[in-house]
Image (cartoon, rainbow, N blue to C red; front, top):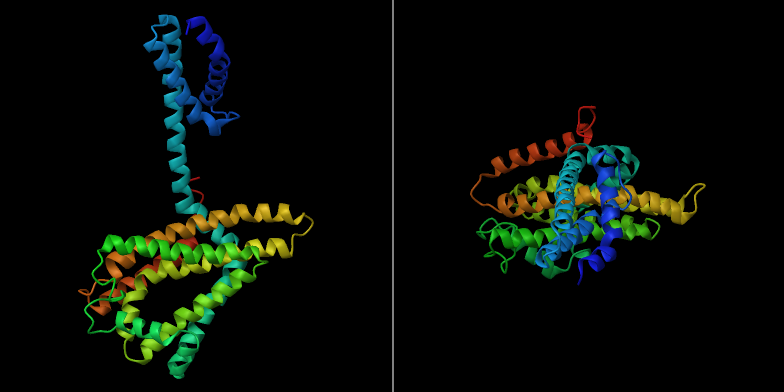
Length: 325
């Protein structure tokens, strides 16, 4: 291809990219910024073609200058993205949780209330567990937390699995529960209510039953650590789902579609924080909770510290103006 034809074909793209660079270099948000990485890669391809075909040094130098400027802007904005993510983790997420405290409180009462309430009922009336969980699953649960089993929190089939395998399993399992609890909020919040109560009852039934038969120490020392992040995440996923449902039930003066769109922005951000909590929970569960060497008292102390850490983070992180913006 002749140089003149090559320039005529791509001149408009280069000029548009140059205008975008000028705006970015002035600190302004340029329109079409989302496509900047793609435009930059295309410019690099044009430079490579120009060099390969031996076009004039004037054209090659011009393209090289744009590539260098684009490289600087690309990585400057990538670093800004990293700063935004860090800001969300350190301040944005806990602020959002506090802002949506009504939904968080409602979800927490449903989830933790059903968990604690049914755990007490099963502990006092042991046969209740079979009304919710099949006998085969109850037996499997007992084998996972049997003090003489030699493994902790894993079924006999998974007892020999490496920690990183279980780490992946815990992530997928927990994210499935959280997403189910969140997405079902689109059923006018009823789906989130159902899964909050159902998961609370299931966990409560297991806790009450294992405590009743004398496996309480192995069970509680196992769950207390990662439970700080995992159980909090389930409640927060439910809060995000309730927010979606409430936007459909009471949209106010907005059309339901618009109210749902606005609610979804904050709900999706909540779920991003939930994913972070579940990642931490899976890591703790795979590499700490399942260890049999530490004494139960050590695990209790670590677990209490983690619960205090989660509570302190959600209640106080991001309150000062010195937090990253």
